[in-house]
Image (cartoon, rainbow, N blue to C red; front, top):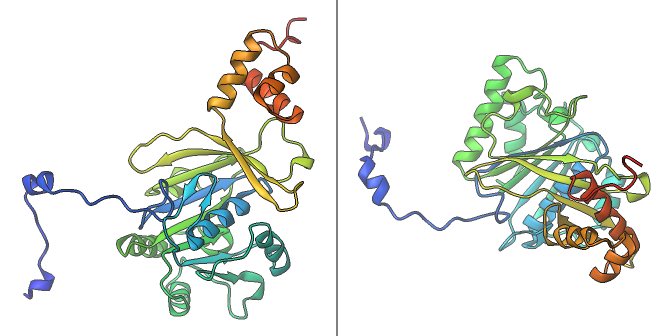
Length: 299
């Protein structure tokens, strides 16, 4: 037996005494090398916007919604639903695309359907890519065929994901929620996931809000807790930009304190330097959370 085939077995004491390496991230602090992540939510809520923003930040060495890449990372984005024209429109909202970001579009595919739950599909992908540090699969039901997989095909996909983890490649998958708003495929669809992010529409969302959604981190490796945030793409300025805030952050805490003093929404917004729309949204959110009384109730 050669030395290369021997197992690396270490005493427990040696593991405890070893100095852990400083953590590295593709997107600090949520996506480390080898992370397997899932974004899910109802159709039209903004899943692809979130995935695109994360991909752009990772590839440019930039930041998106507070998550930061310390350097550019190579990113391959497999787009299963959007056509080239719509993808081009959305990309323009984020600014100039970085050189480290590449796309494969399903509607421009000249061969058979890309199926990452088959040996042939995996071989096609790996024969074409340049070993990206982050692979985005949007939408996983279109590309990976994960919904309703038979055990054999699920094993192939599991092997593919395990190999990506072993080689330090991160994978971010995007999928629709089921009719009840939960992840499709049940708990087995998120088994082994390091990060699960659920997107939901705010209760006060209306069509003119466009891409505005809540992000809830339901699962993350290491058990670190993240407050949910609400994010919105603002297109009313010369250059589109994103705004976000914690649903449990200082802004709503201060708003609650002022509302409990008897101020109305407009007076509260003026005191905080907020627009009238933002002030009323904070008031509605505080009432929905039960932190201030709704004066209309019980009237």
